[in-house]
Image (cartoon, rainbow, N blue to C red; front, side, top):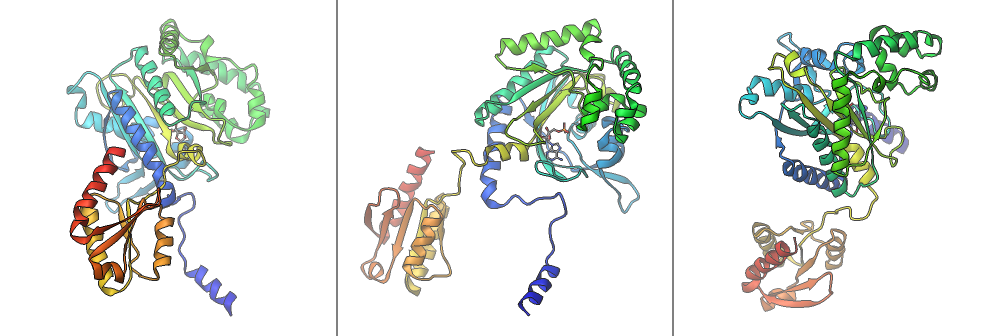
Length: 435
Ligand code: AMP
């Protein structure tokens, strides 16, 4: 019978969509910390927030990310809405930010725009640890500058951000993908080389050979990796301008003390990249070890109908950052300034009144409205990590006082009820000074 009831309950329960996860309250403090530090660093480096819609016209992504990319070919959440328009839930943010930049002529406001955006992205990938179908990114874009110092500045920003998050040990991997002048030559050399290795490639890569041979460099299948040993390297094929640009990026990174390594196999999964591309990799993560990816996309603004201006940006995966930070010391936890415990109806009414007063004065205050014994309420105060415990029992009530216990030091004082409000204001003042 019990088993039957349990099965019935499970049947009634609706679960989250596969690959979509809940961020529960215990984890949210870390998300706040990551976003707070990210905003602070981004704004110090001159970035301003932009908020863009989750839904865009499908064409925006197919035109920018590229028809033959994995994202556009098989990962987008695309549907036709009630007016018959094909819409897609954004799989990344750059396309939407550029659309907004062009639509609102932001390029007329300043020669170089630095924009950032934080929010969810959607890709129908195979879910696994570190890979979800709804995930969150912190995106930053610099639009209007092709100067290699801009590339170095963006990577220096990432270095500062990761340092302030306490992640010093990340690996910054850098490459250049060349430009429309030098990449086609490289691409045909790759196609020719991989053509001779076709039998060793996975079925996806055999198809990529026809549509987008560079994508093979991204494949994780062992035989494809082996087939790439001895493959042409883009850095040998760069034109003079791209070569000089890449050297200058590296020189400026050294000037700013940003450690990096050159990895000629970083091709990135999106078609729009040109010249500098990079990934930031952590050894603390499993198979999905990239924390951040980005690069330059000169030409894309023009292709989307805007002026011919260069651009560069990055996207950090928030789930992966949070996952590295989890379990480390200094994880912020939810704590209270004040817990009010009361015994008896009259005392509970008074405590309820002071609970609201405390909150209006700016204190994080709580009480257990279910009542219960004083002992049970004190246990709750402890569990919530309250800094102070205010007790209003029948004895206190009859004498017109409240007992206030400092949970850190263990000291206890009695405060007359008519002085309670100003005492609470003083606690608030002390909290603000302590930060
Ligand atoms: P991309 O937009 O593919 O260049 O990815 C940028 C960053 O977003 C990656 O380095 C990951 O940290 C994160 N990311 C990308 N796809 C996913 C996913 N499906 N689930 C979780 N994080 C992701």
